[in-house]
Image (spheres, rainbow, N blue to C red):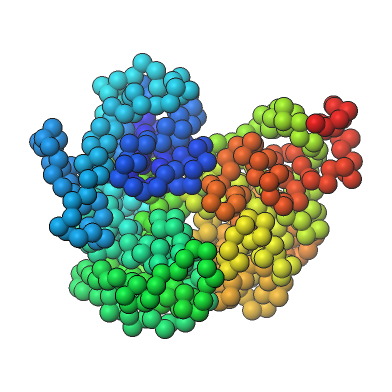
Length: 590
């Protein structure tokens, strides 16, 4: 049984494919279209389905849309428009009620909902021409369409993919149809909703509003506010505590105040940051942490569960996750690596797969995030020759790459299946040595990023606890840990201003060549840590294909690119490329 999951409503458009309970492919549409987050979360973009991600998933299974049994769409418009009123004129439904005067009429809302209601027909006949092979000869009768509530999809992505049979489940984001936060108990592959908080009260929307106030792009740059927070002081904690009120049974309210009236004029994106901006970010981050911690403690007390599963865009806040882990009552915390809206495609598909074909136990646990496209050495070499790019084929990828990193070079690293979710985890990464204290600023310059942005480390799983306090298995870069005091001087590039690092641990089973590279670097330096940041530049999605990697590499000041078994360096004229290279086959390079 094939179940196709689709997320297309707000942002981070994505698709995944489940076969008999097992995930076989998942990807965000942005990686194929090169449009960050796939699209902006505006009402008239709802019609844009993730055709390229869908096409990729079908290609992995070598099937067409006609072969799919169920399609799970991670939004239920019938919570806003009853099914018996679908063919009637739509009444006003506020798109962002927390940001609008209730008396206003938004002319885009009917278009927003009608695109969702017509998504099955759009899937059949709205695909781009070049995707015809995977979509040919299909009709809406070839599969069963399911609308899955947005927060149910989030919750399923957290619980059904987790290693736990029993867990409390919390989802927390900007908004779904009505809910902004939900509480569930997961047992024996079933989810039971125990409570929820509805619009307009939303931690996600409050964080979005401050993101905009600080001159960033909302529904995109919230992680920058989290990084900025480390530089500030709790000057405005009292203000945010007055806006956020925690009630009983997991309920809370958030006052929809005008931030400019309370905090002064918003920052223009082209103006420098001041202490005022740092303090705003710090204060909201602190109030978010203490508020969500209080709610999770209530959730543990009310459910009596030892395990907690998290999803929703707010669950990508690794500082918050670290506080829940360290100061909360749950013994174990698991966070969906694609916690944002991209992960709802996975959750919707898992939910429908389980409902349509119940299983006695878990058939899938998400131990890694490598579910995207991959390219063989043959495909990579064919492209390099076609593009007339000089290269060298390496005999020992891990050993030779480790030596380049020891020479303090910055490399693009392109290996295996692309990651699903917003974090680069060693398949589409930029790697560097953490030993040079200037490496963080060098990388921010290479990627054209803001200078306050930290860079994250990857560490051998077996060495993690020695280098980061109380570190354990953390493969998805979703928690912070304090850098060990006696090791900090050896890895200054990855220590944030607050003494923490957002680590990724790696073992050989998860990603063999990536693990071997860390081992080779450790043998040469004694340090089992590398800097790992995403293979992209500011405002661009993470690279997907060899073409993407080459374009990013040649338009940015990287030193080298390791793609499969092939090494490309910009100072190739000084290198010996006699070993199976383009230069060997061609006398000159165009």
